[in-house]
Length: 276
Image (cartoon, rainbow, N blue to C red; front, side, top):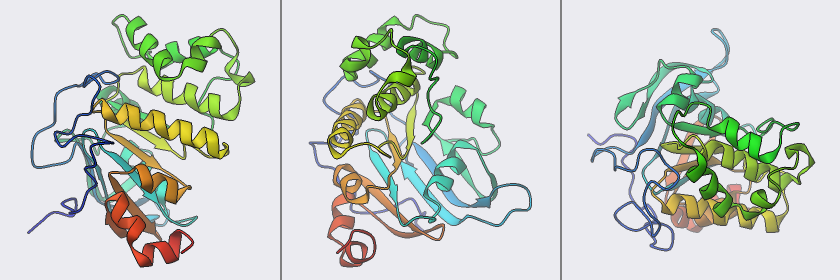
């Protein structure tokens, strides 16, 4: 019997990621784990997750499965209150799972704290409160490398190459930046850990359409290095356009799963979630 994460129709458009799961840039550029995961299972799997907040709180997600593989961009979309961010937090260990499990590169990490999952390789960028406003841009990036004991200068330059404006403003307090620039700092800080998977919760919330397009371009560039990217997005149509794989959640459950292109073409998805 096939497992829930075995879905057909993933977008393997070479403009996003090549069929080998690694893109045009050198694999591992932003990641501390350049080798491919074992065949047969996606790199990050949250399988049949059911849970909520607190020991006795109601279930927010039910039998929810989310996966992302190397070089993929996977997006979670759906109406307000659908449990999108909750599913992301479940993967990161921020709520109690009553059923299901989370596996990273074949290892069951369901019992680990969020801090331990960072050490294992999860780079998580929350929607809000994701930078130190009183610190400079460069100090924020340095804080992102707190778990590392090696030389971080090469990674710092890679982040500056990805987000050139941050190099120009590296001595400026992060709290003085625009909303889009703050998000670049937050993503850059997560990349400083050299994560094995990058998880973004509403990365384009509150930014202009132009800034959103720029952020999505940078996310595509990161995925091309082979680093898996999972993001929750309120701008569903734009997110699905760049997604290898999409999940539409409704009331905490998987309602539709498929490639970004397939979901954009699905009449029911279009009518219910994309405005027709």
